[in-house]
Length: 128
Image (cartoon, rainbow, N blue to C red; front, side, top):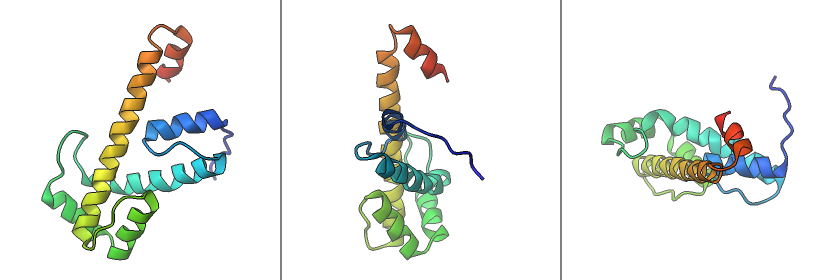
């Protein structure tokens, strides 16, 4: 059983920002979004190259073959990305969505690091 952790609203907002998902809404909405969207990101993780590289046709096809069409469509619906009609296209859409989340999260981290440049307390927090 996982330990219960209490987060303040602004900490959840920061966490959503770092994960690269929408960060507006109430605490329960943010928690739900973090749980569902990070689950989809975890499922996509092994089927794409690192940020900045293009996924190969074989990797996208492997992702499409791993899940049923209904599962891929549900994942697309969950994260709010476009769900085309073929499994391959849905898999490509999900991998593209994941890369977008990674990019937004890295941008958020870069902005936080820049803001902390002259603030020793923020620098200490970013090291953890």
